[in-house]
Amino acid sequence: MRTYDLTPFYRSTVGFDRLFNLLDQATSDGSPGYPPYNIERTGENAYRITVAVSGFGKDDLAIVAKENTLTIKGDKAANENGKAKSEVLYRGIAARAFERSFQLADHVVVKNASLENGLLHVDLEREIPEAKKPRSIPIATSAQGSQQQPVIEGSADKAAA
Image (cartoon, rainbow, N blue to C red; front, side, top):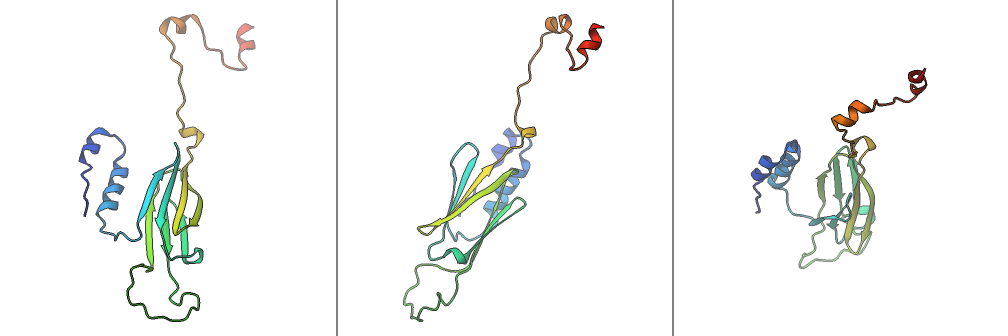
């Protein structure tokens, strides 16, 4: 089992304690590795989670996004849609039920989900509200500040009178 020591990150970051606590929980919960998945960054604010769900159809999968948690559940029908019962001599393709949860950061929303070639792709996007986006602040020097008085809209006529 792989373990990661996140202690160096605690020293060099401020305000990300919750993020690192979530990473510690995710790596130490001992959850099984089924089904395998990838998390990719597809753009500046776009991400994709790819889960290997071979043997599962669209009707066997459920994706639920609630608050900051994305949950993917898979439950394979035991009867295989009425196919004739056959005796399996060796089962190498796992089709057992699973539930995989992902903690999402604030302002991350699920945009799309698609199933192709046994891979479930869930596209995510971080939508930052205008109030949270960075904005540039002009810097005034003391010489400029004493010569020019700031004009407030609607009060220029009153100041001239």
